[in-house]
Length: 76
Image 1 (tube, one colour):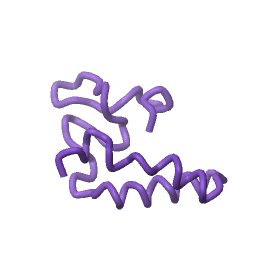
Image 2 (cartoon, rainbow, N blue to C red):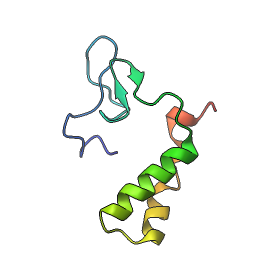
Image 3 (tube, rainbow, N blue to C red):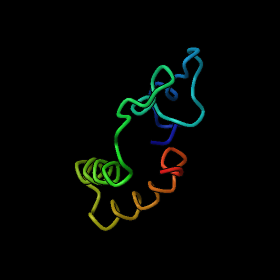
């Protein structure tokens, strides 16, 4: 999620400061909310959410294709 669209303005680091990398749905108090979530699982979640919002499947796939390249999954 874009931090600009996050109602909380981003997740929180362990020290309570705002994260500049992760949204409030994924990152709270310095830890991922779903630590075992794989990039492919996140892609499915995002595609599903976009489809719920009325986005065509083709576009939902397009907007979720780069999820495995995000910093969270670069090492895995």
